[in-house]
Image 1: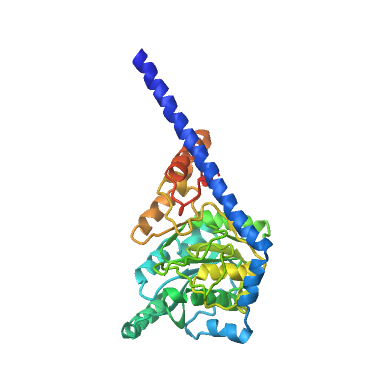
Image 2: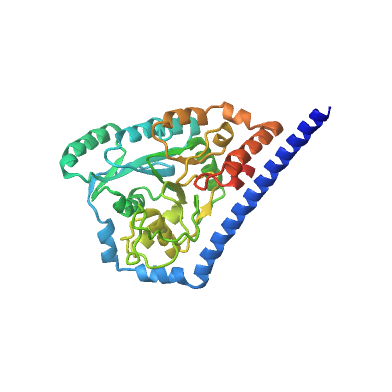
Length: 375
């Protein structure tokens, strides 16, 4: 009897510890969030963001040099006479044929989306040319063949490298403005991302019905400083960006803009120096110049990979870092049983406890935040 009592007391202690850790984690994350806000808004109070925009402003003629690249493959008619809910640009590299194929057959399948979700989504791939001249001609022939089959490549004649990602962003903004500016929403995503299209479409339909404007969602980085370490992929020199903090921005892995925001960001890009090669930061600079701030959606994963669990799939929007497992994830995340597991009082309770364990106790900073467990 005494042993049983000790076991019960031990279980209670473990449950209490679990609860306390969850609360601490939640408040600690909130504190970090507040700290980010303080840094970001302190910078605004000092008018530093206006100073940044003013110092990066250049003439239209100079700005055009960054975006005025010739189209090698284009589809001007892609959105013509269509009521497009979402234009989704996938940033891809010329050699990533298998990634594009997986997207076309899974979450980016326009026929599936129209048939099962009853909306029109246009999915196109943004590309430059291969950086190796020896491989470029042969690969270009493959791209032309690929485009004949699928008619979804948008390619310009810039070198497709990490340091030209901002040029790839300008391609997306320019093409959207010229050929699909009536789409209700614009999304930019990497080609190793998973988009839970049914969840995203339901959400955007709801947002669209409310007639929303100034809409820019994703995982938000607030008050982030430039990385000065020269060994970092994201190194930015003082000469390129001398200021202490970046404007608020969403990671380029995946974010969504409303039609009005896409238009205003494009117009801002025509007046700013685009030599900063961190494309998502440049997007933040353009948005800041246009007076637009990002809004956080807790189920956009940013750079991170979301936990694989049925209770996560029910609300998942994006998860980053998927190549080999994309088909398996699509199969599990869109299984009809996902809705059943999280329905009803006990289903919701089970999923809340599970999400606390996955996002709070076992939390990593690059996936969904702890507060997502309670939404």
